[in-house]
Image 1 (cartoon, rainbow, N blue to C red):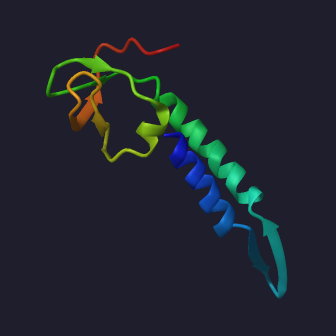
Image 2 (cartoon, rainbow, N blue to C red):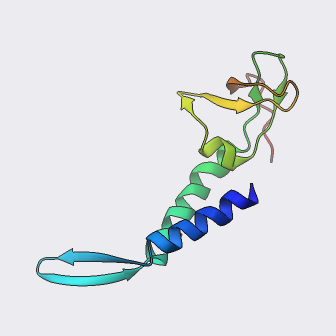
Length: 104
């Protein structure tokens, strides 16, 4: 997981070294951190509550927690998310458990 974060940081720093913003006839160059930091904060604000949800695996009928970053970048339809169950090791469309004993 750490190698993907490092790869993402390297790719974003190469692609977003500076951004050109045109307002009217004026042109401004904005540093890439001005864009990257709010995007990262938005990912945290959306993702951290998702990491506190207990998911139910339809294959092995067990519940589990997963990391927030896996929830943010997983394929999802409504509340169901394609997650890998830590018990049966299968990827399936898991949905939030009815008995919500969420992490504090």
